[in-house]
Length: 319
Image 1: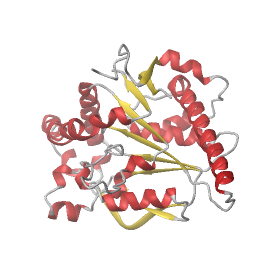
Image 2 (image 1 turned 60 degrees about the horizontal axis):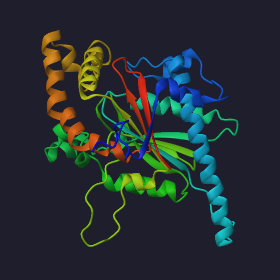
Image 3 (image 1 turned 90 degrees about the vertical axis):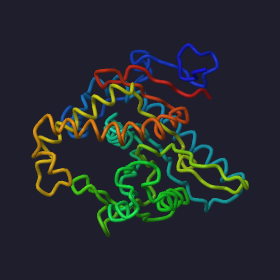
Image 4 (image 1 turned 135 degrees about the vertical axis):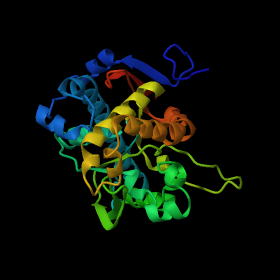
């Protein structure tokens, strides 16, 4: 049984075409300009104002309802415990999906839309890249070719970070990653100080991990999420997008002599494409099949993209 098939009567999701979903925008205002969208979208991502109107304004409205419900529940708990000194913790939105599927664009667009609600909430965005183990450790443990797999992250640091956020701690530090050097930047941190909303984006954020046999509590990253989004597409489409992005980077960012991938810019087009195909088949495809795709059904909302890299279908978990 495929619970993600729109025809499956036992599915926990409701399914909408992009056109149906766009109708739920109601009176949500468009607060982004075309220039801002151009700044927010990732390389080779065609998201434009029309896509924001079709998909993201309705999603912003839905998330607004969830945040308001969370705030109401918090006030009710304050009354239940008769404890007015309890501090409201951030509403955490997790965003998962394969490499090259458009997670970063979705996260950045949502951050800007949510921050422009009439209530002007404080919205922060953190990616899991900074929680990757440093290259020095990955090389030592023969994990460089598993970079992005669950075992290449500092899971303890991830859990401490999210625990600190959900405990309403002040000035929680998130390590910073450089895509230029392809490594964590030593001693550099992003400071997260009690935002109203935190968007937490990464390929494996919905990964559950192994369940303990003795019944002890072992938290997963998603245990800290209030809402989870998965960006989905057919495997072959993601493959095409990954190769196209790699070849585009070969002509742009990889030409920087400081880039970790600078050597690829010196190769012929055919040789570079062969490298990209190898990276896809041996690392990214394997990670998608083994770790990322199996977490799709744990999301509250799934945005499924078509060949044009735009959302064609939305699946929303039933209440």
